[in-house]
Image (cartoon, rainbow over all chains, first blue to last red):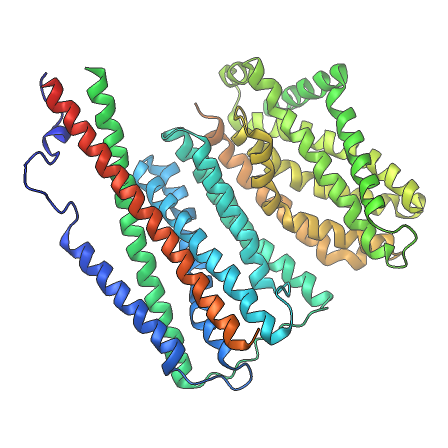
Length: 245
Length: 225
Length: 47
C-alpha cells in the first residue's frame, strides 16, 4: 500500500511519546487557571462588601462577565462565522462557530444559574423577568437548538450551511427579543428590578479584571475546542482514505 | 412579471393539494380548538382577570396549531422526492421560498380565523367590534410566523426528530411575535382601537420585514444539495 | 438560606458547570487520541 497523502506522513509514528500539544497552549491554559483563581480570591476576599446587597453581590463579578461574553462575543462569533462560511465555504468557520456556540452555552448556563441565585436574597424571587436575564434564557434555547441541529446531521458542508443559517437568524432575533421584552416589562412593571448598585473604584476595577479573565477563558476554550474539531475532521478524512484502498 | 406567476404556481400547488386532501387544515383547526379548550379547563372560567389571560390563550393555540401546518409543509415534498423535482425546475430558489411561504401564510391565516371564531364563542368576544383589528394582527403575526417557520421547516425536513427540532428552533425566535400579538390583541379586546397598540404593531411589522428578507436570502443555502 | 448560602451555591454551580465542560473536553481529547492510535495501527497493518 502506498502512502500517498501527505497527511498520513505527518501522523506521529515515532516510538517516543509526543506531547501532541504545542507548548504555548499549555502556557495559556495554566495562565488562565491562575488568573481565574486570582479572580475568585479577588471577588470573594479582596473587593469590598457592597453596601446595599451584602456579600451575595460578590457573585456579580462572575455573573456579569459570563452574561456579557455569552450575549456578546460568543454568539456574535457564531453569526460572523455563519456568514463567512456561506461566503467562503471553508469548514474552518463552521468549526469555530460550533466551538463558540458550545462555550456560549456554558457561559449562558452560568449566567442563568447565578442570576436567580443572586436575585432571590435581594429581590425575594428567583425570577424577576428582568429583560436582560429573560433574553439570556431565550438565547440559551437558541444555542441549544443550534447544537441539536448540529447533532442531527452528519458532518459536512450541508450541515455547515444549515447551521450558518440558524446562527444568522438566531443572532438577528436576540436584539428584537430584548427590545420586545423590555417594552413588555416597562408597560407592566409588576416586579421591579433596579440595578441599584453603588460601585466604588476598586469594585469597578474588579469587574474589569474579571471581564478580562473570562475573555481569556473563552479564548483558551475556543483554541482547545477548534483544535479538537480540526483534528477530528482530519482523522475522519484519513479514516475514509484508509478504507477506500 | 414572470416571477409572480411562478411564485403563485408554487403556492397554488400547495394550496390545491391541501384543498383536495383536506387533512392538514382540519387537524390544525381541531388542534387549535383543543388547545383553547384545555386552557379553559386549566383556568377558572368567569375569572375577573380573564381579560388579562385570554389573549395568551388564543395565541398559544395559534402557535401550536400553526406548528402542525409547518411540519406538513415540507413533509409531503420529502416523501415523494418532490423537493428534488422542485429544485430541478428553472425556478429561482427564492421564488420557491416565497411560494411556500405564501401557502403557509394562507393556511395559518385561515386557521387563525376559525380558531378565533371558536375562541370568540367561548370567551364572549364581540366579533363585530374587534374583528377587523384582530384580523390585522393575525395577518401580521401569520406573516412573521410563516417567514421563519417556512425556513426552519426546510432545515428540519427529513429528520427523524423533525417535529421536535422545528419547535425547538422556532419558538425562541417567535418570542417577539407572541409578545407583540398578545399585547396588541389584549389592547384591542379590551376595547381600545388599533392605535393604542401602535408600538406592538410596529414591532410586528419590523419583525416581518426583517425576517422575511433574511429568509428569502438564506433559503437557497438551506435547500442546496 | 442565608446570604452566604446563595453565594456559595452560586460559585459551586459555576465550578460545576465549568468543570463538566472541561471534563467533556478532556474526554473528547482522549477519544481523538484513541482514534488516531487506531488509525495508525490500521495503517501499519495494511502496509
